[in-house]
Image (cartoon, rainbow, N blue to C red; front, top):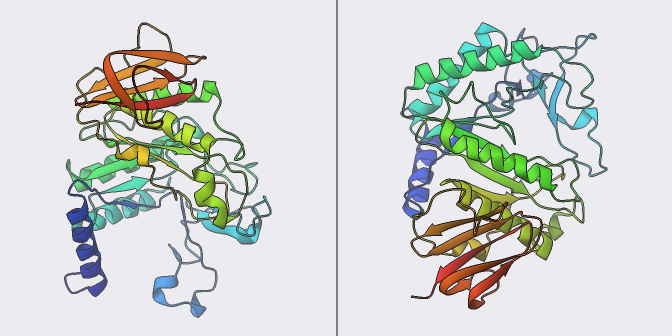
Length: 364
């Protein structure tokens, strides 16, 4: 490993990124629920092989003996994921051999020095995931088996990597209380059932409650990451994505999730593409809203403004963040004049629309 040229390039790349952002942490996604399956390995070079040999007992197989599709993408953009669009196959992570192998992979990642931690996807303490990604009709583990296996895995990983290596789990909008003592945070990849619409008020409240829980539950240092998804108008059109991300509707959703993160946590937020699209996941614009220099938080989390239910405000050294899901537009009153970042308005009284957020900077 010491003489690996690719590893040397990766270490230098990390150093370059750290020069741009000294606070950057690099995480590696570690597969355990699924892996790439390659049926005919004779036609592939060693780095193109599957996660396990095609005859490995680690693959979950259907009644016909075929590996079960674990994940796929709508590559042709027809709105349906077909069998030839499957990108991975299910792995039987109940097996002690699989748990040990994945944990040792985590330790190997740590030893490279390239990454500060790992991310474990599909982390669900409340439901089933061991099913075909194409139809979700047959499950190959019980809920108890999935939960017990995940807990065994994360405990073993923490045992091998020690206290300082970061572990992020992708729980979407759900909590993970049994995993919290071993993980540093949740990747709240916020699924929505309709790519052409935004989130319901009920869903936003559920997201807010999970974020509130996560800010206290996970071990330190906490690295909770909130990711909202944009409304898609022109499905599958990669050329339209940048403009769609900048629509007024999507900018409003971006402000809402940013303000929610600022008023309810001390952690990270991003607003990106809907995963349903047949394009690369998690791409996003950089919004000038994110350039606002709020400084450091000095006010408590989850404080309401003037006692209005669903209207949250938090003070920072250079201004305030406001998040409104009260059900109606709200007036925000300040003792001095502040500039609203999204509108550029200077006033002591500002309006914040329902299901929106805003940052207000002090005029020094």
